[in-house]
Length: 233
Image (cartoon, rainbow, N blue to C red; front, side, top):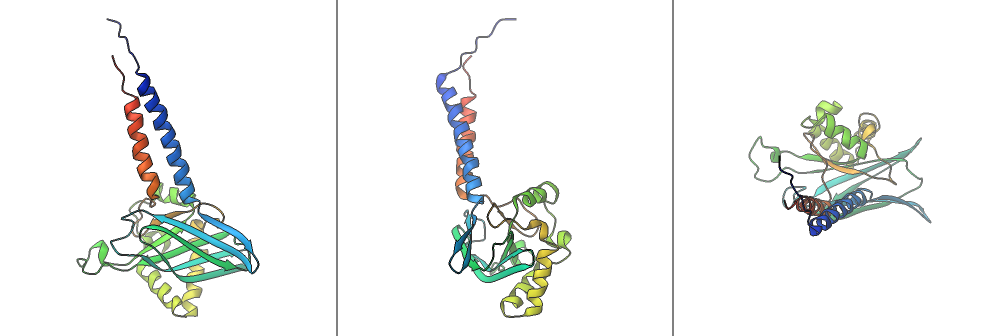
């Protein structure tokens, strides 16, 4: 059997290193885009901020995530703020003041049905969007892709949205019901307000929405790696 002489092009090695560098940058950027919650002491309490960066297509055209509720708690202390909006693409920062340092947070909003969508289609109904703990996000992807909101939590997506609307209009029973739901059925999805989170659209369960910059870098990094693996024989 003849011996084969494999000559590696130095430029290909450089491309491989470049690809790995870009992929590492991609991962760091993805982490940076996910870790956009923060708690800062201020004179009136603590400013808690959540920075969300959505790519084009995260919501239907001209649709934004409305009626956003921010639930936060620590031991017996709890805080809720609502009527925020998350832009359908690009960066949005949700920021408010709490009298205590929360150790758990859950953020939830919804989009309306797309006007003119065919009856029975997925766009013909409202959809929830949530900020959840990264570990819980991984659990959803590994075990529940395609499952409905009601299958996981025993409460329908449309019913939950109706409760959010009533609570925003001043209904205390609706707000109490949301608090109970968030701190029991959705408790595992809560995240550290000073840590990471991921954005999920419901229902059914789909993978988390990636940050815009990480998508482009991932493609570039994979392309560089593929080029770097080419050899001359």
